[in-house]
Length: 515
Image (cartoon, rainbow, N blue to C red):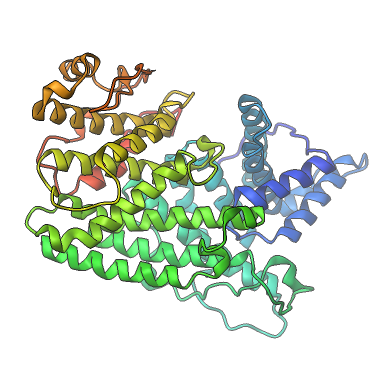
């Protein structure tokens, strides 16, 4: 990272620091468990003692700058998830802490350490939480290079004198980097940076932080927090293989697409069966402690995302009969509607939506799938196919979640860009509804259809429910110069529609304030 201006940032008070640490490990990072909590807590305490010492040596911190950076980014990330704090105030403090982390990394000298990778990985996640995915992608490139340079991707023969904490954190860090690489490559529509064929590293042991006592592993019974991280990494590997097959230059026939999707769906079923009971959804969320509740929700979202990723291309298949497509398309719609219901709060509480970058992306996938399904139905496709919800019910769920994106308060935030793409799909659905039966459209909806060619979604968007009594339109002003004409939504849908939809919100690098 480039050197930054050396601005003195004060550590939080002891109690505040401990509270932020709890927010980070118990809420903000349910599945990216690559940091050893006692080690981070010890380093935080050292930094607080050093700051309060009137005789401190100003040069002492530079020797462990990467460890300092880890602490600063942990604090910065935790601030974002303190729901009780005013948004603007918390973001300002978080950015100060993040700037301190960047400054610490700019002072790093000598060979890279494990903490060098961990600090940069934490920085990538922070940038995603604050709506800067392109900057996060650039930083991830450096993070991956350092991880490979340290040999984290290779299995090492353990020595009797090796510290278990170091051994396990190497594994945890590698698989966390690989997992983030998967989701960012899919989300941005770019090739993954880590190739599975080059990785021989084992998964971490099922040992929680407090089980690695004095550098030794202590076998204990019961459920473990680290299990979610391991299963998250395994699921990401399935998603990565599916994404790479879809983006391959070797084109598949429609029949081959169905066969591939069916095979990967079998893998996903096997993954779900392997989950421990505590994470499987068999236990009601209200009976779980907060960290297991969060992990269960994240894994449900990740599984829904993988299912949608694998099966959504079949919504565009034309040459295969509906009977052959039924299992995969039913799974796709079930995953989409489950996600929509989770987002709308009918099945689980969702807070601080703007900070949950992965939640936003999965929700975007779910809404876009709902709209494409309804568009295809208007085009007389899949009419004989039976699904759990009616078209009106699916539309209602999709529009309810789209309002979450429309409620973004900052111009050019990812949620606003997602909303622009979703509104383009919704307008296409409205146009087809008008063609099929104009009498079912209200006067307000008809005006929206008539003016859709003149008023693009980036100028003024309205939340109008098609086929139902008109409700008061909600203006969703989005001042943007996004080149929507570059997104080809004219029928018939192109085979690479989903790649276009994934990458389009992040394709314009001219927005420096956002990227």
